Image (tube, rainbow, N blue to C red; front, side, top):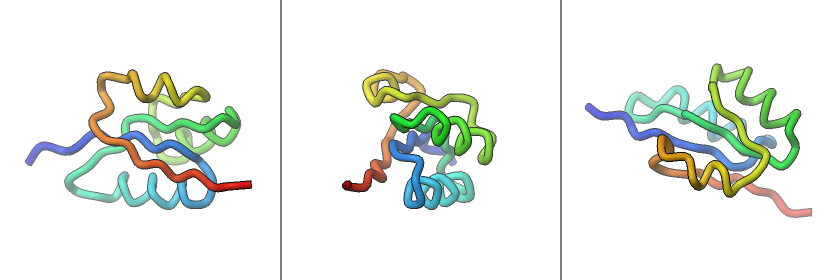
Length: 76
C-alpha cells in the first residue's frame, strides 16, 4: 500500500496531535511541518523525526513531496 505524504500546518497543541497521528498512521507519513514560529516548527520536526520544516505556508504548499495538508491553526 502506498503511503500518503502529509504536511501539517500549525505546530501548536492540535498540530502536534495531528502530526503524531500521521506519524503513527500505517497509510500515511508526515514529510513536513510548518508554523510561523520557527522554534515551534523546528521542535515538532525534531520530536517526530521529520526532515523538513517551514516558517512560510507558501513553501509547504509548493513542496512537491507533500501530497495532502492538515491545517491545525488556532485563533487569537
